[in-house]
Image (cartoon, rainbow, N blue to C red; front, side):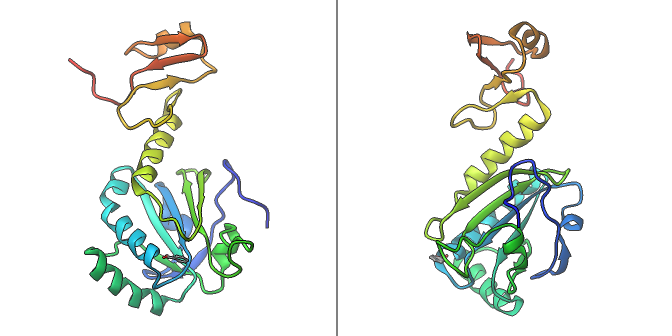
Length: 216
Ligand code: BEZ
């Protein structure tokens, strides 16, 4: 299995999930996708992460992103665990969880890092664009829960930079000024960005977020 890299096609698969048998590409349709793995069922950090993901579903929906989680236990186990997640995290799981007992998807996406743990997945995140290319890969150890605000923030950046000739600076949040892509000369940038271009250095040019409402 080759290592997956940014820009690669996300491998397709058909698997059992808590919402029945699903094909990844059919499930995503024309949407963006986020696939995230969990080491195993009935574990504390994963319980908080899956509950948090359910509470963030409206935010993922607003961004046209479909969620799919993965854990290496079976469907029956997942359904029992979901009862606990709903109870303890005060939510309702509202996205499918893959039952990856045979590690088919975990192997396809290289989610098991043997020097960390030989059987359980690490906390992987793959963000996939509508053309099924991989736009972001994150890997966290089992002991560190992910920050779902950061996942939304990075999706905002991925979507903005996919459709506009800009990049987002350190700690950028939706609505804040962005940098002009290095490939665009400043004179061209001034034509392109009607909200204006601030040149700090020839290679460091800022422009307001093209999607932010215009201030009056
Ligand atoms: C957890 O989800 O809490 C967890 C899972 C595996 C190892 C450590 C923590």
